[in-house]
Image (cartoon, rainbow, N blue to C red; front, side, top):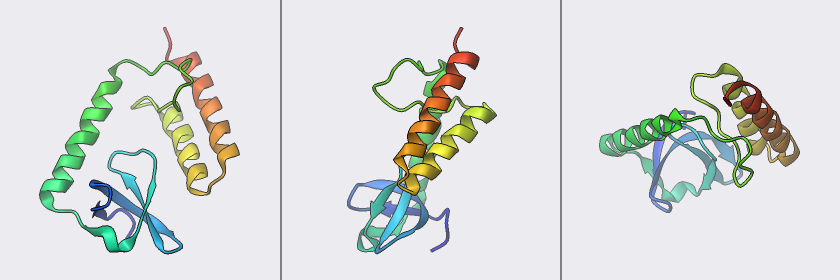
Length: 124
């Protein structure tokens, strides 16, 4: 399987972008980004045109909900990059890379840096 292939996971009823193999499992990421999940290959099939379109529309709607920058003081969930901001995107990518590598310390470091950046650049 090639990275970037869109697959439908029947176990979770989600379309995901194939990222890599981890032991016997495939690593998938939601269309538009987000936390990866493991899927057993027996629960995967190629996504239909309708499923790919639906996942793309959902991702676009999620991006549009960021019209107001996230509050970096909200510690109840990880910060997400502000669309169009190169530094936010880089720090978000650093966090995702750390999570894939199961390096939770580096993921936490990226979250801290992302919150600091958002406080400095994206708060009025």
